[in-house]
Length: 141
Image (cartoon, rainbow, N blue to C red; front, top):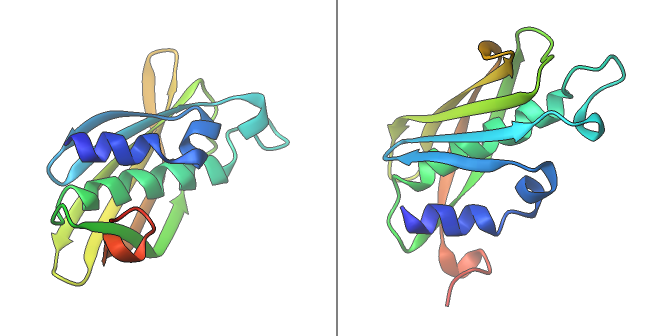
């Protein structure tokens, strides 16, 4: 699982958002990000872009746990269902692999807001992830 954490550490977007990878297991990951003024929309709730960014990454890293070490993954399609405004202190995204095929992985992510010790689901993502050879990503030998 070290390669998952190493890959996450190279993610400039996650660093910019203050996100951390808090859990990694085969086919599952969790990412947590603070809700800060610069990631909120005009009404004070977390911007949907924050939910999408950490949900997509949680699903993508869950997929990365299921491919060989000589491959990376890229999102080919991702859809988000926004369920309720995300008002709170943190967003937590749980990524999961539903089916790991050789050419395509089907993934989901559930995003929750944490406020006052209570978690409330704010978004649900579904998508497809494609394995790619490291030589094509700029990260290979």
